[in-house]
Length: 353
Ligand SMILES: C[S@@+](CC[C@H](N)C(=O)[O-])C[C@H]1O[C@@H](n2cnc3c(N)ncnc32)[C@H](O)[C@@H]1O
Image (cartoon, rainbow, N blue to C red; front, side, top):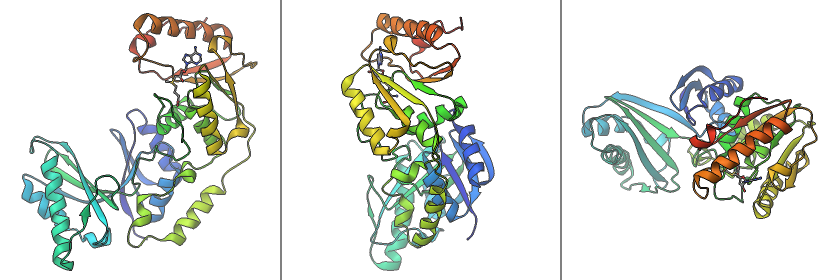
């Protein structure tokens, strides 16, 4: 199998964690960029990366690179690729452009030129053209225009990989699964240490921690990836890769505790935990975190407290100050990681006693 140039996207701040994951999975020539990691790997690696990376959003294959000064350059650059390798004429197509250049007023025109090039190539060969489907295309092409350089990529994942498939039930502010996994990996938590999320909402941090502890690949729950519908998809190889990754799953002694104030939200966490099949690894508790007793001497707290929206500044300050006090007095021997979108809250008094 030939080597492919890959670009794997993620959230800002998770690039290094993703690079580490890519290296551990066997990616070569790994480089870190803003919100992305590039590497080299074959098609088998593309299958594996989609199935097993916890902090990736999309795995993209770099198809070509060329210089651009106008729309014709885009058309000519894109039509130079043989697109029948990546889609069939009766499949659907979408083209998206990420523009970081003053050459074009907006990202729509370059995307249109690229779409025209692909459609014209098929029309010439088949007297028929592929349709566009922006929601769920067989092939999503991404143009990344940076100053006068255009990179053409195809998205092998399809919908973002944070949509693992186990989360059927969410509250209003669920944390992205990829972000939850990234925070846990950044925290350097290890499964032999107890983990507590005393504001667990729909349970994302708890579930991602359990998946990490038991080495359950995040792709296990996903219905499909875009590459499965590409011409030349090697179903046999994909099955082998899946099996190999699933063989790594281990039974592990782990203490993961979740607490949530809202009964209705806790029910959602329970349903999600069951959908992920990790109910044996997680203990849930209903109540205010101020009353939650964990009974542990040491551990790690990872929480994503409420912020903005429903809470006014006073309530927010009170909540964050209570959190600080609770952590100081009831979590000695713990390390705490707080992921918040509230700058006011984050200013609170977090120093150790
Ligand atoms: C931003 S959400 C957490 C989202 C969660 N990480 C997820 O993935 O769904 C914050 C949660 O804290 C809960 N909460 C607010 N005040 C609380 C309190 N005093 N004790 C326990 N939980 C509380 C809210 O009900 C809400 O579910």
